[in-house]
Amino acid sequence: MEKFRKLVNKAIGNRSSDLFILPYQNHYRILACVQGKKSVVEELSADEGQQMIAYFKCRGNMIMSEHRRPQIGALKWQINRDEAIDVRLSTVGNYRAQESMVIRFIYPLKDIDYRVNRPEQWEMITKLTRSRGLILFAGPMGSGKTTTMYRLAKELAREELVMTIEDPVEIEEAAFLQLQVNDKAAMGYQELLKVGLRHRPDDFIIGEIRDPQTAKLAIQAALSGHLVLATVHATNAYGVVARMQQLGVEKYYLHHGLTGICYQRLLPLREGSAVLFDVLSGKELSTVIEGQGMRGMSNAWQQRLKKLREEEKISVANYEKLKNG
Image 1 (spheres, rainbow, N blue to C red):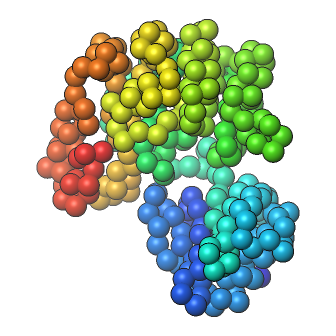
Image 2 (cartoon, helix red, strand yellow):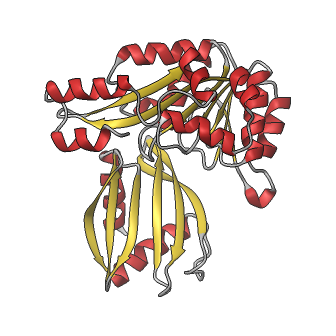
């Protein structure tokens, strides 16, 4: 068990977002995800891999005898005598009944390394939060969307009540009232959002808008004077509008309730990493809602990336990868 503890503590020390225990041929691989990049950090025998999964299932109050159906669990991981973090567990078996597990680490906001590539973009987004309404965030997994929303809301929490609705809670923050989706208890995003409105918060964070009901409730909350920060799946800022329309939100409500859109990527710079945004607001956003204007990434995004390449702050490969979002 000490070997497993060392693997987890090393992953936490490297600020991994997730640790994967995956069957591979006749053995197991342990992969760590750091800033969205996965790499193999250890290889275990089949017996060791199964023992590691069983160890965490036991600690996470999961069913030990179930190896194929998906399960979720949670535990508090003690790093040392004075420090502990929350851990989320997810398991599922493949067609050969080989079980796999993903361990997600929930770091406190103060411990997350977060840099913005263009400080003026942060000032722009902060200004948008003062306008209230719905601000939507898009970007690939691991790009820091939740951290962005939490950092924005943390400033507001000094004088306002911030409520989060997530599946699961990704960052622990004592300044917020944090609710977690529980489908078994019939407490999905829609139900929690309705309960939340009765609780009279000033600001909402919605982990993900994934269905028409949640999309419409988010817009309604924005129209009633709340600030709503939420994520939605889209490949660029312009695609967010199309996604909301696909979820049944009409143009009229987008015009009146949608304050801004922020698409973001975590740039792998020569020295560390930093977030770069593609922001839509004001007249440009209205034009996109009407179905006019550009598609893909904005000219501003292209110019900023080009400048980073000219300054040799990003590699040619990363420039080519990121220029289209």
